[in-house]
Length: 140
Image 1: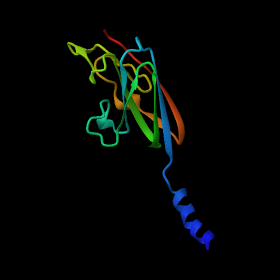
Image 2: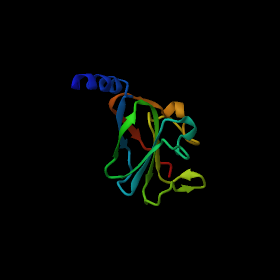
Image 3: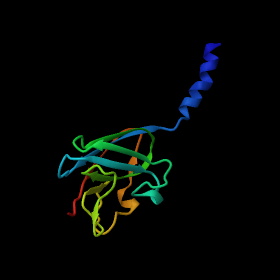
């Protein structure tokens, strides 16, 4: 009788969507002051700030750790945006529109005026652990 009950359960588990972990390491920090604000999204229309994205994952970590781990995500395509909030005031400080704090994106695309396009920052996360290294850029 127990075996008959386990068979349907095995079919349910076999159809479960694969999950993944994404580990983001940050390089080129100019200091270890403050925090890193990290936004991870699978939706192009919500990149880079994840605003109004109910499925976005956000994380704040101390800058001296230079790493973040997102766990139990559905496998798929994601893009990350990172702000080095050196004074930990929960925003990207700017001077006449130019970021005063470090910014970076997954896949390290080139960018100068404004953020890169989603297609240049998106990466595939497969089942298991996925690693992405982001180099920060400072303008001022």
